[in-house]
Image (cartoon, rainbow, N blue to C red; front, top):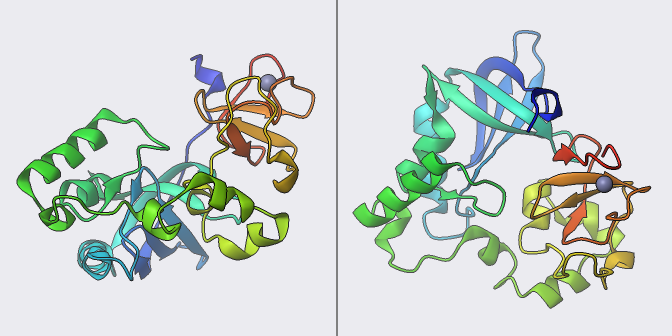
Length: 232
Ligand SMILES: [Zn+2]
């Protein structure tokens, strides 16, 4: 990947004023702007799920009231930052996984350190791994995550109402289609003008032959890596 095809990374520093759950915080930056952060690369148990409250409490114990730095490449369609939280040089997203209070969100990330942290937590039966077969949050959110049922729910009207972050919305709802195969439920998906191919993480625009034709989902103009053919 060439240097300029990588999204530019942005960062902000601020005090943590709210911890909504084990992967969502709000910070107040020096200009008194509130920034809502969805911790990327991880997925914490839902609050109503086993270990959901402990996960939230743990993140709160670590960062609440503290000054943290957040780095990110992208925001979701509602303007929320998908970021990594740093405290005293430590990657807090990674720590949540290491402490067994969040999953490595493998659907969206393949960072080896995160995969290793989850494997370590699992082996040590830390946190949620006390249960030998815990339910992944994305499966919990979608009642088992059966793709066809989730797909039927994907009407544009439910698009905005049902989701809290892009990741959560699309978790378990990635189009079950093969490469170059017309996506059967495409007409039920919002036509955002950009399409993110799941396997390659490439973003295509309407002019591309891959637009809405690969395994993937509608995305924003800054998501993923621009396709070299269509320019994203
Ligand atoms: Zn393309």
